[in-house]
Amino acid sequence: MCMVIFAPLFAIFAFATCGGYSGGLRLSVDCANKTESNLSIDIAFAYPFRLHQVTFEVPTCEGKEQQKLALTGDSSSSAEFFVTVAVFAFLYSLAATVVYIFFQNKYRENNRGPLIDFIVTVVFSFLWLVGSSAWAKGLSDVKVATDPKEVLLLMSACKQPSNKCMAVHSPVMSSLNTSVVFGFLNFILWAGNIWFVFKETGWHSSGQRYLSDPMEKHSSSYNQGGYNQDSYGSSGGYSQQASMGPSSDEFGQQSSGPASFTNQI
Image (cartoon, rainbow, N blue to C red; front, side, top):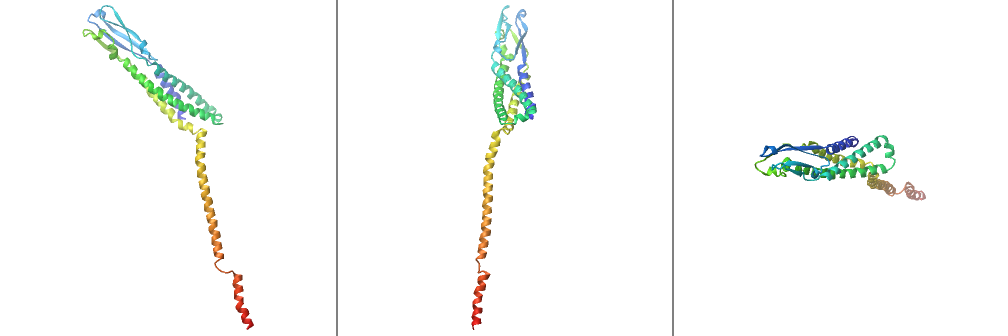
């Protein structure tokens, strides 16, 4: 039930916080010649974080000439993979929720439904782990590439001591950090659900039968051996009791000898 409730929500938070991100930073270049200065250089970037395609112009502080620069790095592959896994996990969670609620009888008719559910759960657990790890590394690269200090090093005007370069504000990465957290939470949720889905499959029931059959055979053979031992003991005791002395008929025949001898006398 926890899987049905939390899986769609966690998937939504994962791809919404990553796929819907847009941010930027602002820099200022104060040249020795004030007319050449630019105190508001805005650099905007967004998902899918193809930073090498983000270009901006800055003053060179050598006349009116402008220097065209671009950010470094490309984290689009890891970001897009992460969002794709989140979207498909969300869709599958919705479909599984509908099946669990409205088609529970058909789901349990044969072993095909639980087996498919088990395999898909294992696959999504692996994809969440890979996707979250890759996106965590990609986010680290994005933070480095959009660090104002790193961007200022790209400007030729900032290498001259007479010019003053500074960051007005840095990009806010809180939502991207949240996406990584929800990515690993999704992995924990899906991986923890593997055991519960496995219990619904025929593999689990067949394994229980395989373990219970030897125990039943062992207990039945033990009971049978105890019964034979008791019957043997009872029959042996009876035979021993019967062979302890002569019967009443034999005793009577033996005692009749002296009586007849007396009569003859």
